[in-house]
Image 1 (tube, rainbow, N blue to C red):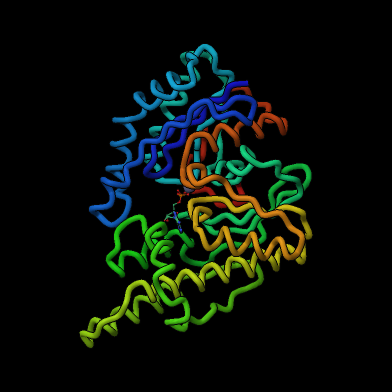
Image 2 (image 1 turned 90 degrees about the horizontal axis):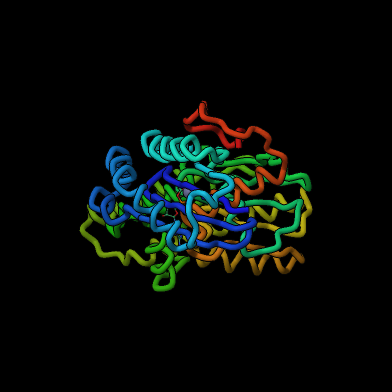
Length: 335
Ligand code: KG4
Ligand code: ZN
């Protein structure tokens, strides 16, 4: 079974072709990071225009690399929510055109499901499992039962973790996206330098805005006094606090929902400290911790093909849905 996956919810235009839910024949990604960098974040209108400019060429490249034609494709999966509305519309309209023109069934995919199923390409994930979803727009702990039903155990009450990384990076003046840079700076700074209070929020919920404010206040104070500080120390203190909180919460969820596997999903799953610490702490409890390879952590079409594959495997019936109502920012409970 060949599934073409289309992703355009934010600043990556990506189209992949995946065979039988395991073999990635192609996964072409056109990233707009260099364009949005100069504005310190994603500009929605520019993102939509870039998707329009690139999407047809990305399809062509993806088909060529996979050495197939549209006639070989069995299903098309497309991200329909959540994301930037204009950006989503480009991918969905393009997918609808292909589906209609070539009579290929279209499978709408929730972006977060895509991030979660990215783990299933390279690993044998055993259900039930717990998924820690950490991206630019989401921070959630999700329990996936043996029948692949999702239960949201909790999420952020304010900023998402990736968003917090990006905002802290902006204050430190180190560019966009902040995650990869802060992750590198961690190893050159002192994680104990800045005392950051752990927010007191309910069991599986998160709050990152206070942590962000602690860093911002420190930077403003030092700038006002015209005193020197080492940005690496702030990056390290920030990352340490965030990763400690994520690990603590997800392992607490394990105490209530014992599982053999924990998976990390979303762009922040690329974080080296989170990968290392959760794996080590999980192994101490006999849990296997999985995360996708780096290229599959951030937005890509292969994860959308995968989520579409599991949707079909789990009994998705509707052959073709050309209405795709609800292209909007859906809550995590709708995934
Ligand atoms: O999943 P993603 O590609 O887009 C959304 O769906 O939001 O995630 C992007 C986020 C950005 O906020 C970026 O700063 C963060 O993932 N990120 C990281 C790392 N690499 C990317 N955060 C922490 N450490 C990293 N190594
Ligand atoms: Zn994403």
